[in-house]
Length: 149
Image (cartoon, rainbow, N blue to C red; front, side):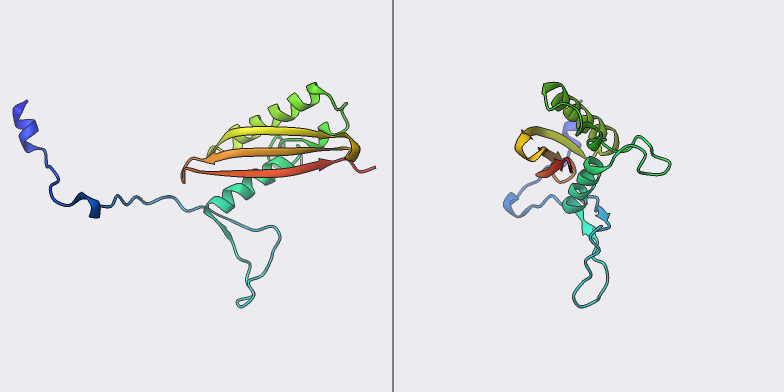
């Protein structure tokens, strides 16, 4: 046992100059607004935390059967817009959001989920605060679901 301790390497000297460098995975996504680069006239991809935030937003606004070969991919929130504006509908919205993020976006962990009913506007304001696991940063996505008459 003593030979194991003696064979361990120890770090000596000025430790303030030491850096821990780790390679983090880079994420890229296509910006669905298709805004071209002003000089190159090429579509600029979204990178890292912006790409993940965009992916979460796309999951929230997607409905069932909108994506070929992935009929259950989406939160199906528009389907709940015409339900009575009560606590049961808010619980259903929360459960749908939690389910879709847990199943299709393992890169994030939900920190906070706030749903506000806006009865005068026939809408729900949804705020999802989440932590991006890879980058250890907090982000949020806010959407307004509105019924059109």
